[in-house]
Length: 602
Image 1: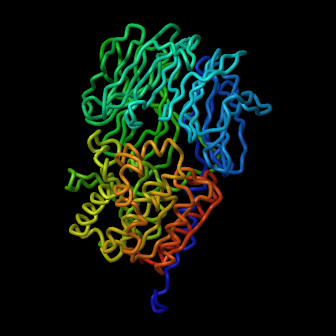
Image 2: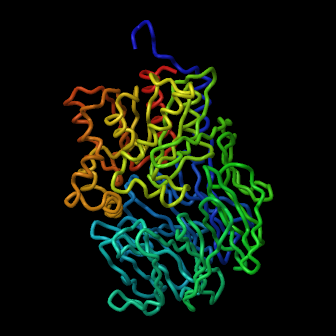
Image 3: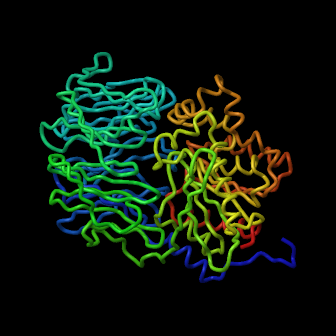
């Protein structure tokens, strides 16, 4: 900007408002122990870092169970509620070991030392046996660790696999695998825990729906001797449910007259399912009676349910928010279950829906208006995944851009979940370029509507969204005045070499093979291929320990920007694929907003 047009500074009260949304403590939906439901575990950032907290509901005593510089994201409880399990990585690199400590407090210890450090691939904790999944560059290993016995490998394969569910009596373990070659569509195998070994697996049953049709084990019925397994399938082009009686090897599909994707968990007495229904960026909860087939909608406000659980007394607890109102953990009938201490964050801004014709069908977008008349300076905040979606939930980052004066646009491009299997899988063989066609369709529609000022549009995203940001700057240079790419894939060939093996397997499925097999496909979709066409200034935010979008391939891209004298900035932080530290997240948003305001004036 010229001296005649100085960079606008945000008023202090605006900065305080957007930062307050990040600093307000949050809590997750509490997990609870199957045999001791008064004992719960939840995550919270009340200390300024996301950590695990134990909660004894009978005494209402809360205790911080973990305390690490870069936070602790994953934890669970043993069935008896006596032990907390949590995953310990190094500075966010996602590579580590499972640790345990007593629920009441005490020393941490490595849970199953024989397993060794790895990326986690599922954990099922029983009273008599624990199943642990691990992934390394050598592939997947699944272990069984009997109480008082010697842990042993029960499955090993070069392709991704995970441990998914134990029966209540711990006799059977269901694992998912991708021996057929595509981890996006897993198959299921049920093993007998007492007698299975790697060399002689005691296989009780198997199920796979074939190419392009995945099965996801959700949970066994929580009753002694009950062999019913709740499974997610996509036989009719969307996520649906079935109940598989493993002993009889019979199944019953749960056919619901709902338009979107569904998932579910069990009510503790095994008589009903708690069904979550996701459609068009919003979600609902239902109780499905297995005996009668009756479907009863639970009374939840319009918005997004991030998780829900049915308690032994029949009550349902859920984590809910919408775009305006911050998250709350409450019962479906209204009362708040768990609240973080301190002031609630400021409210945010409502989203509007747009359905736009695109090259692969109608594209669903969400838009947020700032104050003042259109056309607006606009930030396209594109989601990661790609198998994810933007929705009508509370987003502090979205609200920060609106506070700064930008309209915000989210595009649920092909590849997003919640719009059916064909939509999710449509980017196969042409990743990145397919999604950006949908972004462009929404962009053009908003220009035609008079909503978007095409001279003041920026694109930003993290992870896969960062990849799309860099690829968009290179393949659609005429559209973007600036780009902000956070923890992106920037050089796909180098990223493939350095990323975790599970992601390499995913990439092989998505691209149609490895770089040795289909090099041209990777090159075509790689942002570094198109870097010479970049004209807009770009900010890259990178994690030094990121196993998903590793630092070397980002440095390759930055080096090319420097060689070509392209305007760019970089912000590095000492963590992995994002940060669990609140103040670090605020610093990153601060850097991003400063960059945006200097290059795209609201």
